[in-house]
Image (tube, rainbow, N blue to C red):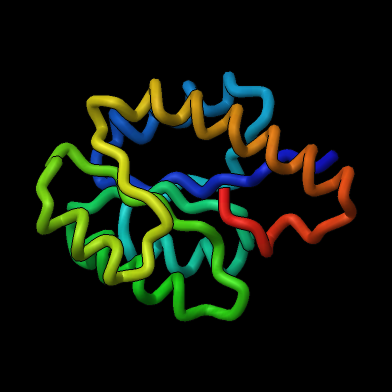
Length: 139
């Protein structure tokens, strides 16, 4: 069974490295790329076709909201989860309007990512057993 593929996007290189190491330790996930800008995220999404993009809200140049809108406008877009240190209702609302599938505060990133990995894996197993196409189901 194919592991869900993840593209990590964050303007903070230390967080990006820590998140990559942590997610690589989750055997149910495959990290297919890392980016440090919104523009790079859009390009890598087109090239790599990840199942999910974990993207930072605040980055130099194009922010995560704008990048999410562009990623979600692509044909067969991946799931997009915005991550940020700013747990603010306005940011959550903007993320939802941009088409994001989720919002994670960085202080709970490692805990929530473990839950996501486990949930993702269980849903894939159930969909494969039923013969349903995986990409059509939310996680």
